[in-house]
Image 1 (cartoon, helix red, strand yellow):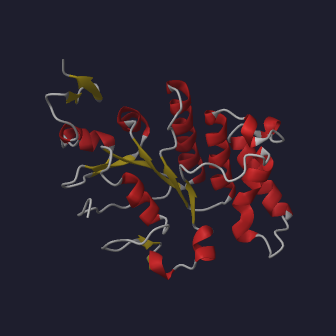
Image 2 (tube, one colour):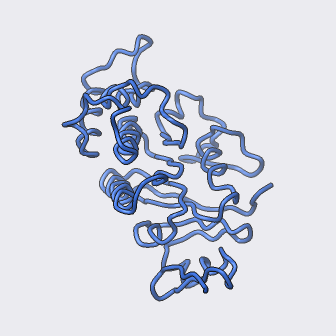
Length: 238
């Protein structure tokens, strides 16, 4: 087992991050929470129900996910890819209702994609494609959105842009959004809650609480990287 004693609760309207060193189990935990892979131990509850009690289609209307795997077909247009988020609600032939189309349009607008909705996905930059994948998850209209490393391969500006979009979605739509990240300093500044996977206590709470608990100081060897609680940032020890 990579990690144990993980205990946290995510509330509606919160943006939360799972952070930790490489190989600690961030993506494994996220996939377990989304029921993509079976849990090794313990229990996961969603709205007072055990996660195992949800059928696949039922769960798809409650939890949406944005993973790191490449898009199956980049020949789709932005509109077509976002429309796939409505699959849990369409009939057996996949016909979109007026409600489905309104949800797709609203998602495109929130991610500022409507004017380019007819572009093919292979024409997009990494940052644009990430926004499309978030729009697809938003169109799925779930209470929970899980994202695995949503800022990977993006430059600093687009990393910040994506996380600020996620925060606005969480606060304005009252969805619970949880993502894994290596961008610890950004998460400290933008997240409502954080889970620090340190292989020990795995503390969870508001960033200011975690700083007071010195949770970030335990992540890396102090002779290599140190954490400044006053600035909320890491420093390389020379």
